[in-house]
Amino acid sequence: MTGQSILILGFHYPPTQGSSGLLRTLAFSRDLTELGWQVTVLTSALVGQESQDSKNQQLIPDGVKVIRTYALDSASAFSIRGRYPDLFEWPDRYISWAISATISGYVHIKRHATDIIFSTYPIASAHLAAYWLAKSTRKPWIADFRDPMLMKDHPDTKLRRRAHKWVEQRTIKQCTKAVVTNDNAKQHYIGKYPEKNPLDFHVIENGYDEALFDNALDGQHHESLSVSANQIKILHSGTMYPNHRDPRYLFEALKKIAPKLSDTGKSLEVVLRATGYDEYYASLIAQYGLGEHVKLAEPVGYVESLKEMLNSDLLLLIQGESCNDQIPAKLYEYLRSGRPILALTHPDGATARKLKGIEGAYVVDNDSDASIVSRLFEIFNTLENTDGHLVSRNDAQLGRWSRRRGSSELDAILRQIQ
Image (cartoon, rainbow, N blue to C red; front, side):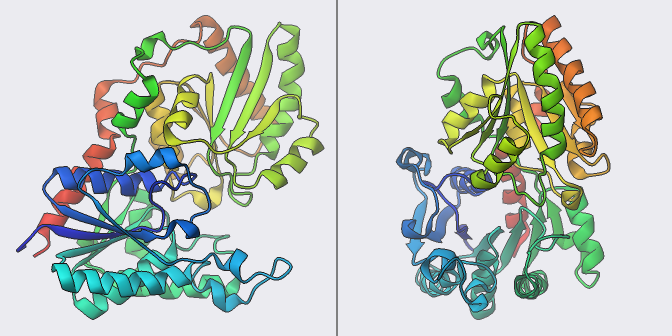
C-alpha cells in the first residue's frame, strides 16, 4: 500500500445511541487512528438519526474526521397514515443517505487519495453506497457484515428482500474482503457464494470496550460492586425484535416465579431497557399480568447502560432460532461485566456455542417456560450462596473479547491489501 488512509461508511455513529453495533465502528475508527491510519468516517447528518445523546459526542476519537451527509427516514418523511411507497425503502428507509454518501464519498476519495473503503451493515444503504464508490473509484473495499443481510424472517417484505439480495450479491462480488462476526456466519457466506475465494472471508468478533467500562466503574473496584439482598434484578439491555426475540415463554415463567420469590421475602424486577418496540411489549406485559415486575425503560447513554449491567443480578439475552448465525454485540459486554448471563437461545446456534463452558453463563432453549423456571431457580440459588458476587472469568478469555483485539485483526487485513 502506498498510504494509510481509510474511509469508513457507517450510518450510525456518535452521538447516536441505541445501536450497540455502532460501538464496533467507533472502536475501529479510534484504534485504527492509534495504529497510524488516517481515518474518515462518513455517516448520516444528525437529523437522520433516530436517537441521540449529546454526551456521546465526547466518544468520537481525536484525529478522526467525520463527514455527515443528508439523510431522511422514509418512514417518517413520506408516510401518510403509517404507509409510504415501497420505492422509498429500497434497500431500506435510508436510501436518501446512500445517494448523498456516494456523492460526498466520491469527492473525498478524489481529493484525499483515500486508499481503502470500509462499510458496515446494518444498514444496507452503507454497502450500497460503498459498492457505487468502489465501482467508480476502483479502490479496495472491505465489507463488514455485523449480521447476515438475509435471514428467515428478515427483511419482512418481498421488495426489501429482493433489494437486500441485490445489494448482498453485488457486495460479495465487488468487495475485496468480507468480514463477519462469527464462524457460523462465515460458513454461511462461503456456502452461499462458492465463486468467492474462501480466503476472502474473515471473522472479526464483536467485543467489549475497556475504556467505556473504566468510565462506567468511575474509580470503583470491580469487586466492590454489590446488588440488593432483597431484590433480584434481571436486565435485558437493547433492542428486542419481536420476530427474533420472543419473551412469551419467559413471561410465563416469571408469572410462576414471582409469587414463590415473594414468599421468601425477595422481590423480582425485570428491566427491558431500550427495546425499540415498547408499545408492543407494554401490551404483552399487561396480557401476562406482569406490570408489577417487568418494567420498560428508555434508552440511556453507553456508559450508563454499562453501569446498569454491572449493578444487575442477572443479564438476559433472547435469540430466536432464525438468528442462529448471529451473536448479539451486547453479549460481549455482558461477559465483561462479570454478572451471570441467562441466554434463551437455540442450543445449536452461534450464541450457545460462544457461551459453552463459560462460568456463570446459562443456556436454555427458549421453547419451554418450565425449563426457564428450573434454570432461573438454579441461578437464584447460586446468587444466594455467593452473596451475589461477580463471576470469575479469566483474563485470557477477556482479552480475546476486547474490541481492541478486533481492531488489530482488521489492521492486519487492511495491510494485506496491495
